[in-house]
Length: 259
Image (cartoon, rainbow, N blue to C red; front, side, top):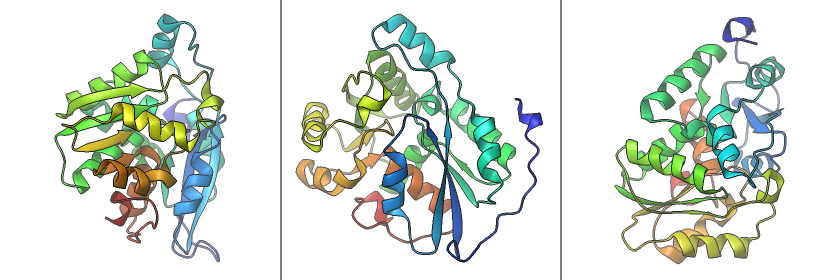
């Protein structure tokens, strides 16, 4: 299916439960974290509507094939769009981060524009949401990045932020053995991973990888390390709400969620 094949004409609408806004959320079929985390962030009068897209498994045991998959894999995004736009949402939040960090800032901006035009409503990509989050907290120049990924993905994400003008003090990947395994990392393991990635020069922490359950840990991590954390799920949902004029703080989700 191409962009031209997507011919859903709709006007965003409110309803009895979604009296302020409806948020469409995309997740990979294997992702079990984005939906419950974004439901925890949902303000009164806003409803979330999740659709899933099938992605091929990335071969973590073959790093050359893993890198190639990062560069070439595609999900059935257009099919998933068709299944959710019919509920007439106000904004789309993309709960799959890695693809949005391909290339550099211009590619991310172009992709956001393509998806906005395709949907006719704001389409929030994780990379652009994290950049918006960094800007909202004062645009710290030095960052440290935690992911659940393997070196080829970590290198791609590091390159993206460096191309956007940030100095990456350190990147640490947790090397998850498959997509569903990401959601099984415990709070203790995640805190330990942040201890590995924290760097004295880093002014902010970044989390990429939407199936890693970080969001509810954000206040604890910020207190422990004394610096803000821009987590990908918090940033994506926060930016989706702000794009449509919903300005409620998101309690229990850290510094950015209050902006």
